[in-house]
Length: 56
Image 1: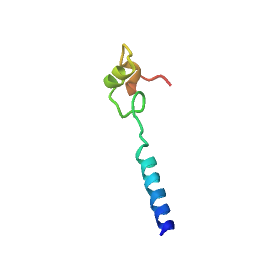
Image 2: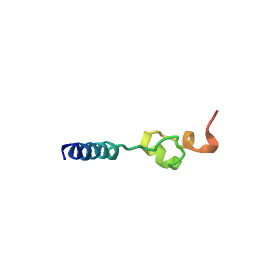
Image 3: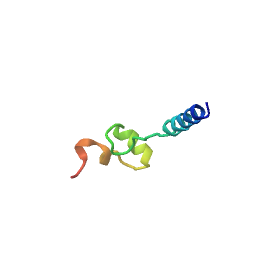
Image 4: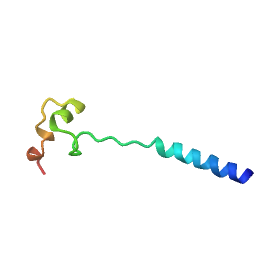
C-alpha cells in the first residue's frame, strides 16, 4: 500500500512538472506575421521580419 502511494505521488509530481512547460513563438520564427513581430520586438520597421526581405 505504501509503495502504491509513492508511485501515485511521483506520477502527480511528474504531471505537474510536464504541465508547467511552455514555449513561445515570436520574432523570426515564421509563425508570427511581420507586423506582429514588429510590435512584439518594438522595432520601427517590419521589413527585417518579412521572409522576402531577410538578408542571408
